[in-house]
Length: 120
Image 1: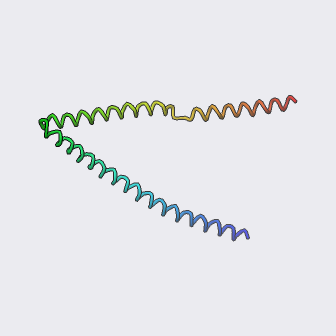
Image 2: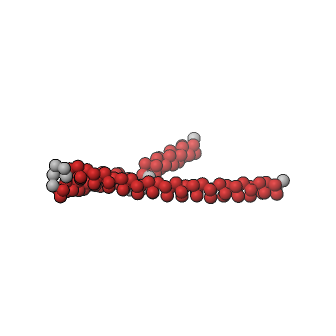
Image 3: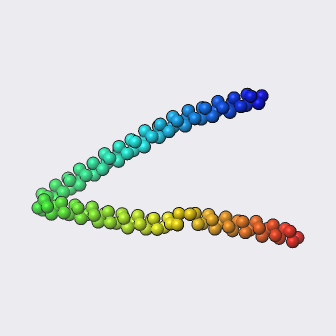
């Protein structure tokens, strides 16, 4: 029976390995396709920005239309950077301070319970 269990465990591990390799391949392909979608989206946004500049150029000189689009893009980038910086500051320090504090409280409660149990 020991040999059967050993064989069963080895077979299950081999099956798990095959399954994980297959899932890894699918995940890699999916990540690659997401990257491709991102590149196409970037080109789409670029084309849209050129279109906005062209529409503005109907009423303004082309250089002014391009300048307006560039200023709006830089303003959006600046806002995103400020919001990102705020998010990063809120995430630091990287250690889970609340979980550590909770664990310390739990340890103190257990130690107190042990001490009180010894004095009874």
